[in-house]
Image (cartoon, rainbow, N blue to C red):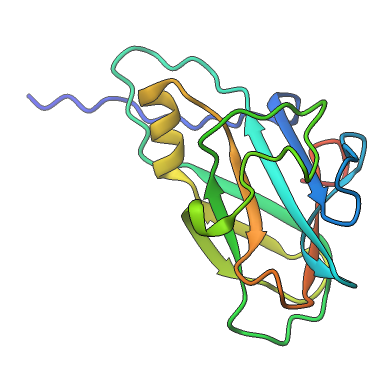
Length: 173
């Protein structure tokens, strides 16, 4: 007989999520109380978002087959450039939710970072983004080093910006 292991879905939930943005125009400010996550460039200021999950313990011999990052857009500004993408980067060093700023963020240079997935920016409100983060989540479980991920524009010189609901925002479902 063939035995198929059961499949189950885990939602880490907002209480197990640390999400925050950093801004080049406020390089020493920690935005831990903000209800939105900013990505892109607006009026010369660059925004990036960092997300880290407190992962649940999986049963022995578990295999991660799919992991998805769902983002709900709060608003966007000017997405006329089809060559600019929302990139998901893997963080390779630790960061602290209570103290992260532009100046101490773990990814200073995007050219040195690993893109995990990307998608086109979507103009409008309440749009949903689904990004595949399976490789990064597998890596977190296999290596035990969960430093989270970072969202940034693929071209931070282009004046296009979006905002997502953070885990602290009650309308982020």
